[in-house]
Length: 484
Ligand SMILES: *Cc1c(COP(=O)(O)O)cnc(C)c1O
Image 1 (cartoon, protein in one colour):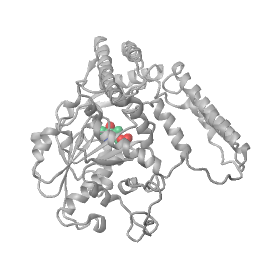
Image 2 (cartoon, rainbow, N blue to C red; image 1 turned 180 degrees about the vertical axis):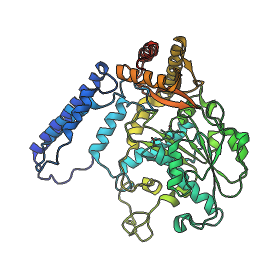
Image 3 (tube, helix red, strand yellow; image 1 turned 60 degrees about the vertical axis):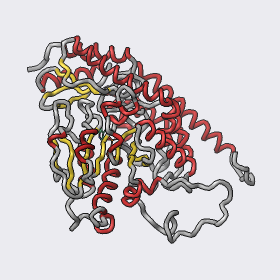
C-alpha cells in the first residue's frame, strides 16, 4: 500500500452507492453470460425492436446510475449477438477470457491515461511486459518493440507509417516534415489477397489504395513469390499471415529471400495468423516470420481479449517514433520540457511512453487486458488454445464433408469454407442457419465460389459446440429449397 496521506473528508454514502452499482453491474454481466447458453446466437426480431427504447431525446435531467444500468441491461443485453458462448463462427471474432474481462473492468476503474508512463506507471509498465511476452511467444527478434493500438487496422497503419519513414529517410526525404507531395516515389507491393483494411491504411498514408502492385496468389490465397515484381528504390512489401477466408499464410521465408539486400521493408499483417507462430506444431506455416521488419496482430481476435486491442510490433523503434511522436513543453521527452529533479525520489519511471509509438495521445491501457489473458493462460495455455481451435476447425470441416458438403479450403488454421451450391442457395442456407440460432456463420465469395465462412476463435467453444454447429448446418443444407 502507498503511504497514507492525511485523511480527506470522505462521504461513506458515496462509496456505498458505488459499491452497490458495481456489484449490480457484475451481477447483471454474470447473469447475461449464464443466460447465453439458452439463447439463439443471433438476437431475434423482438430483441431488435426493443432497441427503439433507446431512441429518446436526451433527458433534461439525468437518470440515476442504477437506472442507466438497468435500462442497458433490459433492452441492450437481449439485442447483443452471442459471440462469447462458443457457437459464433462469424468473421474472426474471439470471445473473452474471464481474466481478461475482469482485468478490463478493474483497469477501467483505474481510468489511467496510458499515453504517458509518468501519468500511468502501472498500466504502461504492464503493457510493456505484455509486449515482451508476445515477442517471445511469436519467436520474434529480442529487440522487437511495439505498442497496443485499437486493432489490426491501426497496427497495420502504424507499421506502414514507420516503413514510410524509413524507406524515404534512406533516400534523404523527411516525410513527417515534408509530406508525400514531391517525395521520391515509393513502390508498394501487396498480395492479391491483402486485407481491405491494409489497403485502407495505405490510402490514409498517402500511398493510395489502388496505386499498389498486386502479386497473384495460389488456390489458398498465398502470394506466388515467383510473381513478385522487380524491386527498385524505396519499397514496401505487405505480406499476410492468415488469410481471412482460408487461413493460409504467404510464404514468408521465400519473400524474405527474394527481398534480401533490396532495402525493401517487409511488413506482415498477421491479425490472427501470427498466433500460429506460438505453436510448435503450426509455426512452420509462418516460417521466416522473424525476418520481416514489422508485424501487426490482434489480441481481440484469437487471444480472446475484450475489444478493442491490436498490437504493432517492429524492430526499428526509431522509425515508428519518428512517425508517431509529438512534442510540447508540457510533455515529457521534449527538450523544452522542464528537467526532472536531479535526485529522483524512490524508484524512477524509466520505461517508454506508449504514445511515442501510437497514433493516439490519450488512450486506455488496453494492453492490461492482454497481459491478463496471457498471465491466465501461460505459454502452454496459449498453445493449447490455438491448437485446440485448429483441431476444432478440422472437426467442423470433417463433419460437414461427411454430410456431403464441399470444403473449399485446406483447413490449416481456424478457418473453414463450406459450399452449398450457387449464390442463391448459399444465401438461403446461411440465412436459415442464422435464423435457427444454434450457430452463426457468414457469407463469402472465395475465388468466385459462394460459401459459408466459419472461424473457430472463441475460447468457450467446445467439441460439443462444433458438433451442434455441424448438425445445424447439415440440417439446413438438407432442407428443400423454398421459394421460386
Ligand atoms: C481482422 C483483420 C484485420 C483488421 O483488424 P481489426 O482488428 O478489425 O482492425 C486486418 N487484417 C486481417 C488479416 C484481419 O483478419
